[in-house]
Amino acid sequence: MMNIVAVLEPREVIFQDVEAVAQIYRNLGAPLAEQLVTRALGELALTMAGIAEKVRAQDLRDLARQLGQLRRLAEDIGLTSLARVAGDARTCLERADSTAFAAVWARLMRVAARSFGNDYGSADLSG
Image 1: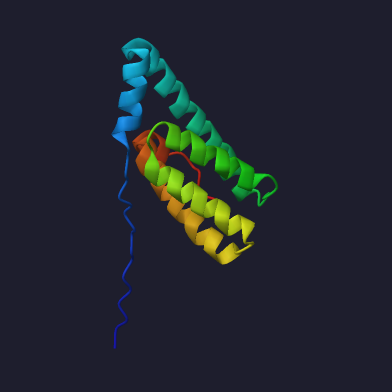
Image 2: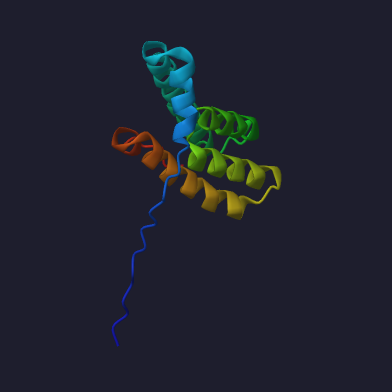
């Protein structure tokens, strides 16, 4: 009898609050808003890369705080899926649940890749 192995590739549905960015544009005007959103996306990407490096090095000190920062930054520009999963990862750390953290970390990487687009997704941020 032949064993068949199915490879599952989870695909995350990304939720965004477009009103958050629209509000920034209404309040600041297009030129300033574009600068702010671009800077926020850059800060998010740097924060995520720093977190990924800490996870890869298994250095969990201060990681809960950094995940909280990632959550807040993502909320500010309407990346609700990224914010929610970053919060879930922080909760797993605070509960010292390493199995749950590993699963949520994998999900956070998928959500971040989808949230930041293909360029971000191709970066080696696997922990």
